Image (cartoon, rainbow, N blue to C red):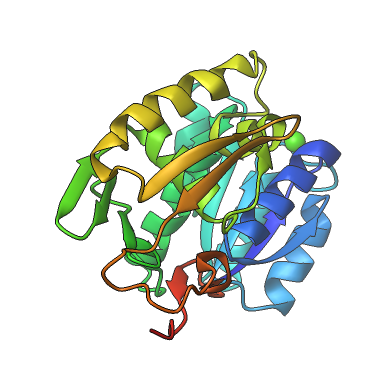
Length: 254
Ligand code: CA
């Protein structure tokens, strides 16, 4: 899925670019409405994440012009304005959906997936990591005959750790990906939710665990089933992230 991000705040644009790339999307970022319009017209993006308040030309105008010029890209408008009239103006201008700042990165991903489904852009409804299956709609994690339901935040946290394929992630990075965007609270919330998630994952025994990595943060560990693992293949080497954001297992030699 090819995305264009049009955002003038440097830090926000950087976070969106990095986060969406890491989520498996092909991302182009530009910093003003004029550049956004030009890039969107020249390239056939599946979706445009468009800030409302932009220099040169605001997001509402970019949206109107794209639609009047026949662009079929999905448009997700980001707005700091809470008033209903701004949302109506955005939707009337041709946006498919909007998100009010500040928002959680998980919600942004969910809305992008929802728009992709509506526009028939193929995006997976589940993420598989070896034998572990994360069901995006149901917010469920499934391994063999055990399934556990998670809250939205717990689910986003699990997927965020899963995508690192066994590498440690800092609390700051986890905060950026899972919480308010940009997040203004304390990083302790990460420790708190890791605690919740660990408890939820107890039915999986030692198959799925979250390790505390001293001085770094957290790492998710997946242990291969004793029944199926005979080669001692390092599980971390057996998974890959597909361009559509799905993490799928490569053929694991048994
Ligand atoms: Ca702005």
